[in-house]
Length: 285
Image 1 (cartoon, rainbow, N blue to C red):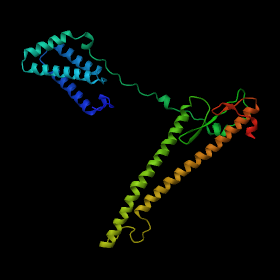
Image 2: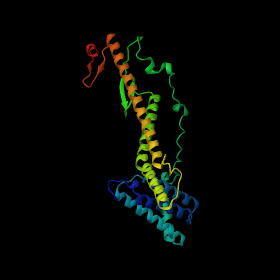
Image 3: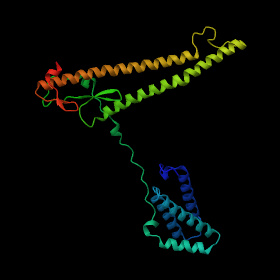
């Protein structure tokens, strides 16, 4: 077994443990034991496997596997009428602690997600941040936003933690951008070469056998042209998204600069940078 891999994630170990567990439970159910002893032994097997499922020491694993195969051998012996195996199992069950002979607790299913947590409240367009900022006057201290970026998605950070609605918007934008990228890679590496091969096949049929396929004479639209058209649409959508993000970043930059200028004008000290030096009013002119 590789040392860098935990035993519970090593496939041969998992298969061996599961096979031993199933064999023990199967033989225990049909063993010629009293009902109470059979139930106690079955619960003990389930509890021991549940407690030892995270063992990583090879010596401890060897001991528990040896004990499991010994019990399995005794269970097999009881079916053949071996009194020694039956007596050893009976004495073993009598020496088990009471907690091990109790049925393991039933695992409760996780509670369903709260649908109220998935409902995000978005402000109307007239109250959007980019439409109302910067504020000309504020009643208290002016909170200057910070321009941040999440994988090239610009946004304004006002407080921490950020609102769930903002996180939702960022995730949706990133998912759409990743999907466009995956589609672009698939078109370039699979569909366009496949369309080129289809065009070569159509030309071969027309040249060798005189088979006229749809569009073979005019050559106005080929297989590869359709794939390239989809790729161009993908690139156009990606460029539009990037241009929109750049325009949004410029608007946010102007908001931050204007909010900073107003905050300094009102007598506040705006802290920016690694050295936490306050921004002077002359730097904004």
